[in-house]
Length: 104
Image 1 (cartoon, rainbow, N blue to C red):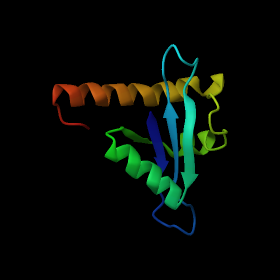
Image 2: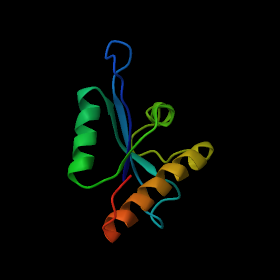
Image 3: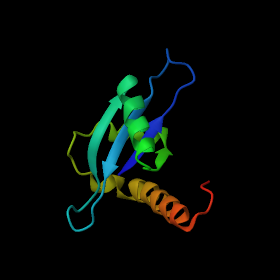
Image 4: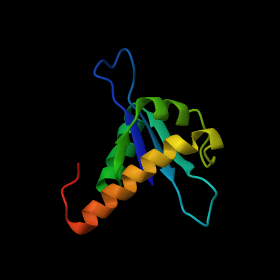
């Protein structure tokens, strides 16, 4: 599972959003949207991710696109490249954590 967030310093202009993805090779062809929300719900998604050791990647443009998808929907092929970049970050973070290295 990977979480993406969009933070705003001015709450009146934009509210924080978060989208959680799950990718299980062999179970699905592409990552699936497992949670999404804005405001307090987005903060809860991020808090749970962090509490469970799930890496969080911030990408405002990608979270905006992913937030338009339905829950339990696989990401469409046109988003594969962008999500692949996020998953690469997640896997690299997990590998560094397993080796005891500092996360960037």
